[in-house]
Image 1 (cartoon, helix red, strand yellow):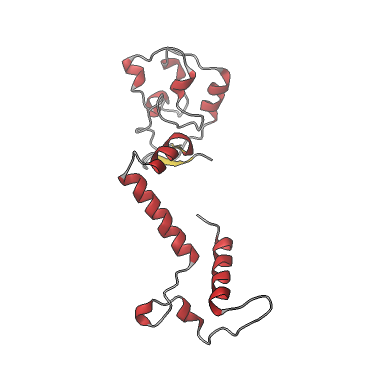
Image 2 (tube, one colour):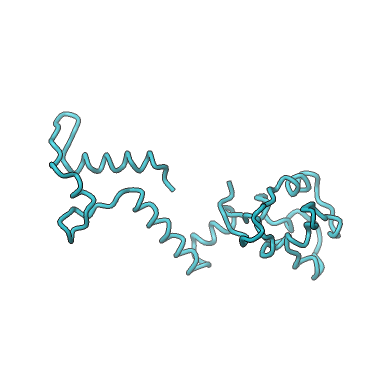
Length: 168
């Protein structure tokens, strides 16, 4: 999303262009600025506010990604731009999904995973007291990855599904 301040400035610039204002010559705005936002059907100019256009374009991009998961935007975002927001922990694969923000953990180990470990979800590596149970794993992580796992925020929203989000 564009910041609201940027949207307001873009709307202001659009109005200036529309009414012909320049730095050397000022024109009076029409008496009723509301015609700027009104639809053409009811006598307005049909010019949308920047914030509404921004939301519509983001929704269109999301729709493109959801309907074409092998497309350019989807592949770009799924590789480096997104990570999982942990909530109920049931849909995030411990080894293959980017839930720490450092990439899939499988990239940090040597050798193949056994079938049981390969299918582990994040919820299966947390105990009931919400502590990590990394002793269930047959691999030892480098200290930096171990620290990253422990620094990953744990959600208090257990009733909500896990969610892909931007990797900040």
